Length: 270
Image (tube, rainbow, N blue to C red):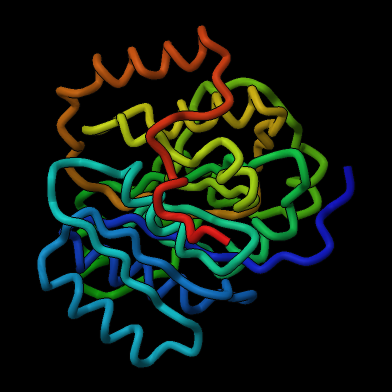
């Protein structure tokens, strides 16, 4: 496989009622060495505080900043991502959560590592809740390898050449995390996007990966590139996890390549 020749990258950021955290993420997204062609906020029902903050960025940014909002009917990350990806103008999509600080070369690295026939699973550094609070107060978006409060510190190292040498394709779904992931938009549409039967936290990203792998789009693990720092916060409730595990198991056992309740309903028919 050869690297793709021309990539127009849409950055999708999921969020829900965390404007202070999203503020930091947007700051890092707009200071990229190779900016995305647009930033799309996939908003799972936040109140007006988030809308006002996003509008401030939209008015000042040199690239489009799009706010895709849906009614708050519980945790519906799959639906929110589908709506954002359906509206995307780029042929390549990078998705992150609204609590991920992006390295200056984050988009550049995703584009550089993209290959036809694969999707990228990136890594993350973990920042404690204590140090996240101080970072929000100071609006500091830089992450140092040596600062306090970091876990998975090795994931703050950027070595582009080593990253390319160590990248490999896999059919495994272990450790799938949509907080740092990218794929060609057409591949996402081919498997009908994220499965909106998932309501509540968990497994919608793994099930999406299962269908990609089953359709021949392999996972490409990327380390030492596309660096991002996960800001600390309280964990989401997990009462829906058992039901979501069952949906994931159905996709695995059935070797599914698509889902019925997906992105197709939002796509403009040509």
